[in-house]
Every structure is written in structure tokens, then in C-alpha cells.
Amino acid sequence: MSLPRRDFIASTAGLAAVALMPEFLAAAPRAAEPMGLAVIGAGRQGRAIMGELTKLDAAKVVVVCDNDAGRLRSGLGRAAGAAGVENYREALDRDDVKAVVVATPTHLHRQIAIDSLAAGKHVYCEAPLASTVEDTAAIAEAAGKAATTFACGFEGRSNPVYRLARTFFRSDAVRALAAIRAQHMQKTSWRFPTSDPARERAVNWRLDPAVSTGLAGELFSHQVDVARWYTGQEPEQVIGAGSIRLWDDGRRMPDTVDLVTTFAGGARMLWLGSLASSYEGRHEVFFGENATIKLAWSHGWMFKEADAPTQGWEVYANRQQFHNDEGITLIADATKLASQGKLKEGIGLPNPSLYYALEDFLRACLERTEPACPAAEGAKSTLFGIKAHEAVMAVAG
Image (cartoon, rainbow, N blue to C red; front, side, top):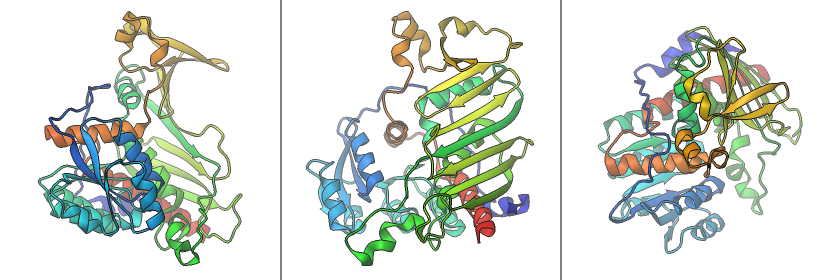
């Protein structure tokens, strides 16, 4: 089904656009004393967040919150010395908690994020921001009025490879954009076992049409955010379809989705998401007049057209062969690495994208600067994911 331009505009009205361009590999933030954080939600993502926070000297997890005793125990195992609480409001009452990370299921973000801002805490909210238009708007409004920092976890904007590649994309190195192709392929059921039948729905919220925005909301939103950030243009229409290709276990949520998104400038983004195959994983490809850029979260490459002019920076380039095409590896701080004879060592990022998003959040809190993905930007990409999911479900029935 297609959702036209007027529906997008109605959903996103009043959300200002902001785009920042920090240093590619900025030094990790420092503080006289580590900032105390509460991680609310100790599921898989919450535990991954705690793992990355342990790498940052400026952060210390002082509270872990989850209303499931098993998950809370697992979370406390990742945060030495942290207190464990079941009610997030107990964390907000503590003076040693200066910032909150919201890592609960998406549909539970709204009240926690708004209450945290009202308590005077900095907030890092996992992306997407929410599962409904109303909740997304409410979070964005609260963040816009708050005196504290609010960051949305669309990680591409903090990723050093993506920031570097964006400078090439927005220069004559790529020039006219022909099309965008992206995918998120991961062979996994999205269904997790639970010993308590009463918790089946809560544990497997991603498969519940009443609260979940499916593959489009949870996955596509991250990649359309990258496209929005790169192009500076907004989607005007989305056509979507989905079906169950592998996990025919009684679910109503499609396990495979394809979307065609048309941007204001006329370019289209083709997106495929599936839980039935892992082939080629997650990546985005920007096809341009002079070159094509492929981004794969920890790596990036530029494939130049035969008639494209040679750039001076290519003297430092490391190249990789892909079938009949040769890709120039996009490496943050390539000139410095080349002078040290360490160019090949810098091909991939040393940390996952999540690390750089959390690092950026801490820096914004400590230095009172705007985060890479503020609430207004995160809200727009969240809304586009929600609308794309609506288009898919209108066809899937």
C-alpha cells in the first residue's frame, strides 16, 4: 500500500530538522568523576548498552532497572556495584543518577522518557523513539522543553565511518544521486522462549501487532534515518508489502518486508528486511553520478565510475576487490594512519556503532552540546518507520 505525501507531512509537522557534523574519531569524553547512569531495561539491548558503557571512563552505571527478576539479575552481572530496582521511579529519585538510558521495549518508552526529563535527568532513548505517532510527538515535545540533553539512538549519525562517508557523499566525489538501496537481513525468529506463559506476550512484544511496528518500524527506521541525514531530504511516499516466508508459527507480523520510499528530491530508496535469510546482512548503498558508496556499519567503501575525476586524497586510499568492482575503503583518519604505516589496521571500526552513539551522548551531556541525533530528528525517522509499517500491514491484512 502507498502512504502519500500529505500523511507524512501531517505526522511530522512542527519537528525541526537538525544535522550536525562532529569530528570523525573524537577523543572519548572525560570527566573529573564518572557520570552516574541508570539503565532502564535489562534485556538484550540493555545488557549490550551496559557492556559498551564499561569502556567509557566518563560513565558509571549506578542503577539497573527491570521488572523481570531474571533479566534484572543478568543486568546486574554487567554492572559491578550497581543497585537493582524494579520500578524506574526509584532510579529517578536518586541524586547519583544524572542520566538515564531507556532500553525497554519500544512501546514502553514514552512515560519513562518523559518522567526522566521531568526529573531533570539527561536521557538516551533507544531507537525508534516510540510505536505510535502520539507517543513519538509527546516524547519530542518533552525533549524540546527540557533543560537537559536528550539523544535518540539512531546510531548511524555517530558512526565514524558514516560521518566520514557523508563528507564524500555531499561533495563532488559522488555528485548526482541516482538511487538508494538498503537491507537488513538476519535469520532469526524474533520469538524468545519463556518459562512463564503469562509473560509470553510481554517477552515477544515484537510479534504483537497491538504494540509492535514490525520490521519497518524497528529496522527500516534506522536506515531511512541514514538516508535522511545524507540527503537532507524527507520521504514523501512509501509503498510497502510484507508476508511470512519462513516463520509460519501463528504470528501475524510479516517476517519479510519490502519498501519503496520516494524522497522529496525524486530519488527512491529500495529496502528489504527479512528474518528468513542473513545474506549480506545490513547495509546501505548510495548510487551516484561519480561514485557509489556502500556502508555496512563497521565498514564503508566507495566505488568510482570510470569517467570520474581523480581526487587528491586517493593517494592514501586502501582498495578492496569486489567481483569486478574495486572499492576504496573509507577509513576515518586515513591520512594519520597512512603516515604511521597502519592504514590496513584502520579498515574496520574498533567498536560497534552502539559505542559511538553512547560516547556522543556522554560528550553532549558533559559539554552541553547537541547530540548527533536530537529528539526532533529521531522523531521524524521514527514516524517514517511507523507509517511504513502501516503501509505494509494494510496489504498484509
